Image (cartoon, rainbow over the protein chains, first blue to last red):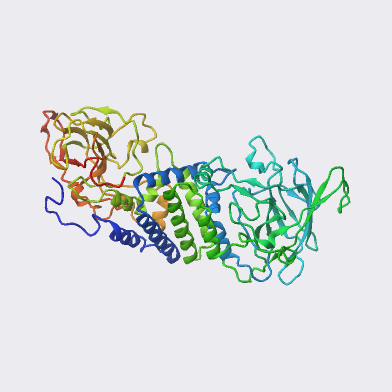
Length: 304
Length: 304
């Protein structure tokens, strides 16, 4: 005994399957007041249903995906952002960044934001040591911030974060109560900046969570080439979120998150102990790296 | 000063953008030993990148999606499964179920599993009251479990869960330490089952989380028609996960999760106080509903 046997009429939104189901889901977004949101959701639903049907996604596979996404969210915290990491290893982050910041106008290119940014990092002054105890070889980073027309940008704000000698960010060390290898500082009146930190090293992205499982299932390398993260901003300018990569790194052509830009690679020059360019006495070997940032004005073409 | 100015050669996996970026991400899955996993991931990446590029997804929209998915995972617990709820409201769940359980062979149709199943529910016997204190009008549910060839299936296991009079499942009431409107029982030697519970009522899906935000942004109704969840299983048979819906419910044509099948609708018949069919004396008005389940054998066509 069921409805069909009882001769009931099938309503327009019952027994939905295949195309009719997709159409009904799309129609349920027709009432969204934001046209952009409606378009985004309808395209997303279209791709999601097409994916499931093309692949004849099974219930077991669906359940595995549900479990995976649940754990990706649950492992995320104020010290770890696994959803961003997932977007990064699937190349989605770089696809979005490529559209928002096409390599035009001489501005510094953008790359992945990554999962390790923390707001409200300690404030430093030019010449300070952002390492703040992080393990690694000393490295003096210096450069200038300019506009695309070549003018220096005084007092541009630089936010900096990076991994230590062991390839770990401070937020990956639960025993730490202070920021290490992380800080913000302002360029001087002529757009110059310089600070000490530790030499960045290549490292694996965090692979003890669901994204690590995904990489292992694909036999993919979790390695990233050595880099320092920068977010550079100034009034009237577009913010540039990027890295400076270490030239010669063995993983420059195998970045797990597809973020390497040729224009973002700089030499880390090794020096014997002695007086560094900023006048400080260095008792151990140290490195220097020079990199200039170029910010587009707020009115130059940008999509974001 | 940058790499391009230094005249370095661009490697094949640097400066990736647009199609070249998508191709490189796909290639990184070529090493996956499971062909099915490789195909799934490569199709997923293809759709994900196509979606982002067709919509020219902005960084702000990407960040909103990251935040949304993070919260969907984080609000999920052993009492709430928001990722399943998201799949349900996007129609993905019903699309997968439709492929795994096409309506053939006279078997009971399947519908959404939903976010409220809990394993290890209390065990009951035929005639027991699964309400266990849940608020609502008494309802006697009875039927028989058969094979697609019409044979009764003795001792078939039924798992049952449902919302109470207020539209809430037990797991949505943090003050409860016992299961209510939830249990498992076995059919008798002839496949018959009967139990008391409360009359199901229509209700909104949980809309105090991210999925609720999504529905509100789309001005979509969160309502589901009244139903009782069943998962029916027996050795040698395929398990059927389904609902029995209440005939006449105002939301049968507007289910927030697209789950209504005409064949799953049954009349809830109202009775004045008196002796019910199972011999019990009822001092208040009560309802009865009859529904038979038909399980396909394990060897009949199924995709899961």
